[in-house]
Length: 307
Image (cartoon, rainbow, N blue to C red):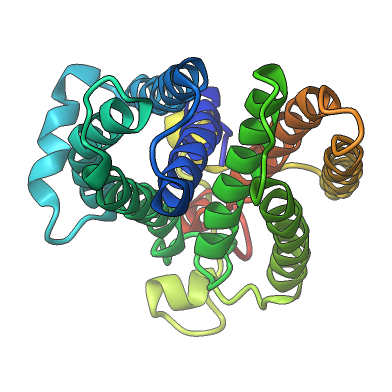
């Protein structure tokens, strides 16, 4: 697939936003109202801002962005529609949680339940985003069990990394977020290793023979077009194996550096800012490669022997 930067921005920005929002909600269930008004407001504005930027950027990938609202009507069958519904439902709870957690409205008994609901809805929304890709049987690299867990742990890893950076800026003790960030990062690296290993070893079962149902001896006599069309440009993008290997290596190196900086942040808190920057770079590299390696079955009809 041709990696669309609007979709890469959507999945990375909204993932970090929802991850941060989920962690803020979960920590509030034990800590309660935020002791720092400034930290609470900035954290909520950044979380909701990243989510909003991500969602708006996703509509730019549509041919008619003004019709995006129609996708919400298919929630019974479409994971894309369910993602939109989950995102919309999460907004009022997130706003109510932010107002009470920051202390702008005094309701200490409501902080914990609103925080839990906000965290749950945030993770559900990320889950639905991952399911959009995991349920596409036409793209072998995405249609496998590790796609959704990778999306979830990317959100937690990037969200916790952002939380550490904000804590450093406001001179706050990150508390349990520091070990959560490292656990999420290590788990993410392990899951991504297993994911790439799985898609490399998976058999390329999509062929012209089973696509047409005409038997094993069928072959393409002539391609449909003499020049590239929209489908070929969007669905037929291929990243060279050597480039994919280098990008995978770069991802793990940057992720390792981010983890080391987060460890060192216990001594020098401001290093967590650099850790978040590296985490975001790692997310961008991984997400670009995720889309670039998604080979659609439609490429069979444009000359590919397997997909």
